[in-house]
Image (cartoon, rainbow, N blue to C red):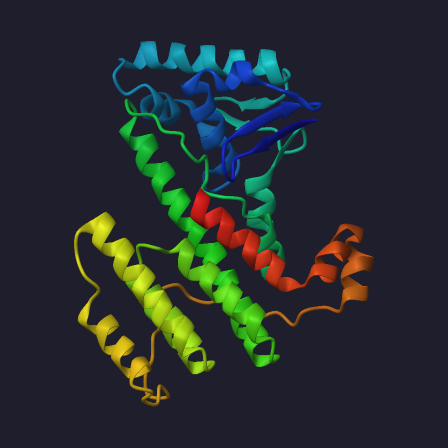
Length: 292
């Protein structure tokens, strides 16, 4: 069995043994990442892969380089690790277990807690391919798409926790969601409104201050007028019922959380999560988003 972990730093193992030889080759790593995460899942044309990963070469040279990369991966991971169908190739989903695909399955099933638990950091954190701009663009888009999905699940859990009266859990999930979308000021306003509406004005103002400091140091700019106006409302204790911050992403349907007994029956590994509480999942998510 081959295990490819790409949420966070890339880790590739075959039967528990690290496959450092493959990861030492950036183009082979990039090929694995694309076949592992590109939509739609399945077969991808060789000519596209060759152009994307070796744009500096002519068609013949790039196809030869792709063939060499495929053969190198097969030697390390097994002959059937990459399947071929005419001019198309794909990773064998039976032989290769992928954390990205497990997370995507949880997203498809609207299993929000599972989505939050599975996210361990930015897709292929620290990896890039400077001489392949099309691949870099694809990787950036995938990173954003995955973060959007995880943030959406975290917001759903925050709203559900709030409605259940679990305010600490709700705040932890909301902070995690906003941290994932650090560049999105609307997410910051949503966090401020969420905390203020929950009676945590101090936390809401702290969220503003932290964002303003980050924005000044990283972007050399200040929060938008709408963000300042919301801060003033919260600071002055004004009602927030007329303030609306709509997320750009469509929310996934809210799940009714199954009982601990039902979760344990479905997945015996879930029980420790139940023991420490759902806030632990939010804290792990927050740590992954901050240190990724």
